[in-house]
Amino acid sequence: MKVLAFLFVALFVFVYGSHEYLEGSKVYDVKPMTKKHLLVASSVEQIPGVDVWQRAHVLGRIARVLVLKESLDQFELVLKSANIPFEVVIEDPKSVIEAEIKQQKMARMNRLNGTISFTSYNRYDEINAYLDVLAEKYPTRVTVETLGTTEEGREIKVIKISSNGGNNPNKPIIVSDAGVHAREWIAPATALYMITKLVEDITERDVADNVDWFIIPLINPDGYEYTHTDDRMWRKTRTMATSTECPGVDANRNYDFKWSNIGNFSKPCSILFSGPSAFSEVESQVIRNLINDNKSRVKAYLTIHSYGKYFMYPYAYDGSSPPNVEELISLGNQVASTIDALAAPGSEKYVVTNSADAMKYTSPGSSGDWAMGAGGVNLSYVIELPPKSEEPGFDLPPSDIEQVVKETWGGILVLARYVMNKSI
Image 1 (cartoon, rainbow, N blue to C red):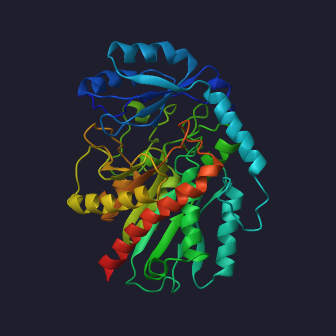
Image 2 (image 1 turned 180 degrees about the horizontal axis):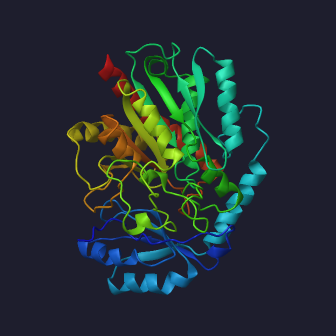
Image 3 (image 1 turned 90 degrees about the vertical axis):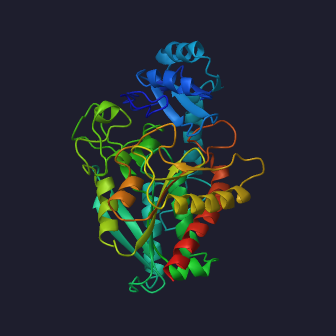
């Protein structure tokens, strides 16, 4: 039986080195209202040139979809034939993305002296320079380690933050990563804000002193840099071993827990390609090793994504619930309500849900599932950060960065205090 796993997911063969392939494309808001809509939607998976930006994890919630020019007629025909509500929300995504790239280049300053900004997006070299400066300035609180080296020779660094040098075996550890999907720029920005609040601008001393934090602010640096230099919509790693024509693996489908290599997961040109084998990517190996090396102390795992305003718990591979599902939902609701209270007035609320939920959008081999199912971390969450407030997309403008990172930090504090109090 074919699982209704991917609402409007297609092969998405975008292998170009510029944004010319977006000429004539459109971005749609699609609102599935019935189970019949979901059945029809499954056929759209097979249309090449469709990319899901935001999935409707609950009925009546918007799904946002980018469709290339050659697939527009077929895409709309399927929706109209089933009376599925939709509208075009971006008529010219190419110009929107190119305007963002131009803005980012103009905003980029030489911050290699170890400072970062929350008014523009920081690049790989700036992020690493910042981590190194923190380690130098705060040697009793900060340790920076290189966990691995990518296909293109970039270091994946973790910053370990502890009030006592990490030597207290009774203190809980929270592990967090960001940027596994390269185009989700707001995710690394949020991780960097977490680091700033735990090291340089400590206003919540309790969680800074009583929890050890292992944060990887940029886990897919090759893909991230490629989105800045070549293709803003790139999502995967940049591994060439499987296919030079269609490089890269979705590292969030690459973990050895219910890993799958069938359907779109087996196609190198799919944005969902799970790799030639589980843990084929260094980007997934580093999380495995970090958690396994600290298994007795890691009490929570948070992977940061965008976008959609979801706070999700395992299991993503089939929608089943872990034994502590009530705890996960209760804590998730506290986190979500805190973020909602800090958000701009009128903002859409966060949804707390199983990562696959009742609609069976499945994600076998994900980091959140592995952390709980194999890594033994009982509190494992995925957060999907907000889109920009006007036209929807990954291209959250620099003017929105500060609001998003601050409200998200408020929710993360709830998670951290829960971990801290539970460990006392």
